[in-house]
Length: 382
Image 1 (tube, rainbow, N blue to C red):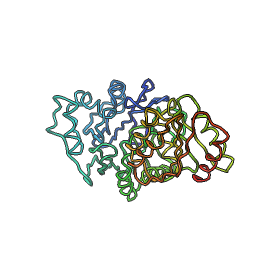
Image 2 (image 1 turned 135 degrees about the vertical axis):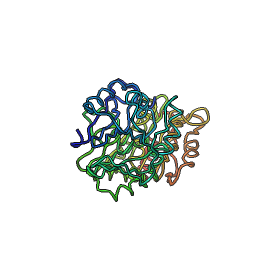
Image 3 (image 1 turned 90 degrees about the vertical axis):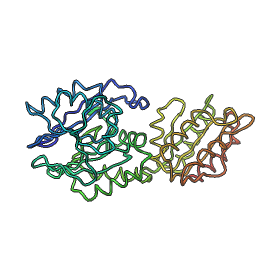
Image 4 (image 1 turned 45 degrees about the vertical axis):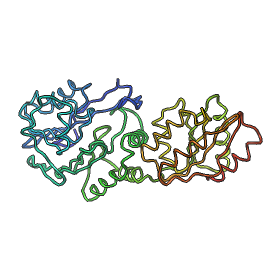
């Protein structure tokens, strides 16, 4: 139960291995849906088709014999919209409420869905359920173009679509910040300006509860979550320290970065985090590249370019609108080092990236003669 009138009817999915077929979710994920019970009944979104049967059972129990009047479609991505047709077939009198763009998208996913009675809403429109009045907030590109959020003035609840969501089933014993951060930067991160726009709208509302489409309902210390979203969406630095991302073929580049980490700690760096791009979760590495303001990219040269794991990582960063960071480069190459040049070229396509010069070049295994360059790099990035 969210409030006396708002019930949670979502489901956990603990068997999913890859969210969006690309992000590991060791603790699963939740598909959240809610129902508002008033003079009129409104269902807020549906769930992934993997859990349609369980979702409809939850809805039936919450309705206790009543019929839903409205299904509010805030987001058309299939992990939230895939059960729309099943719900409509079970409750044929329900009216769909959605943005114009969402209604245009519905035929792309469903055939034979009758949209003649659908209600098109836009920014500022309201829908009265009785005591509860819903106000719709346009949130395009957070993170699809049709997205809207919904504010319930009665219980002061913001239904935030994918905003403020996180990976992990609802019973996962984990901190909100870590998996919400990994979720944000990998799912929404490219669209910081659009998130900033929605946050400005939210600032004018009296919000007591946030109901996202993934993760827990947020009821306490809302300032913490809003502050995190403001930092993330403005590409600010969240944590002081240095993140080292390493792509090493035979381990020599990795050994050099372990030494650099020792040097940084000895010089008073408050936090040093390392990732092996060839083995560690890329989504976690991307999260840390945004979390810290200072980053070291270290890679072996490969085919007159850079190790593929590093090249792929850099393209992921560019695709998520990476910016406002200080980056140092370390390359390794036995006969023709090319990694730094390639990394610099890709970084040149990002905004507001300060590259520490010069890049450090290591040839093969780390030697005592390489240590002064690593010391200088540590001084430069700190």
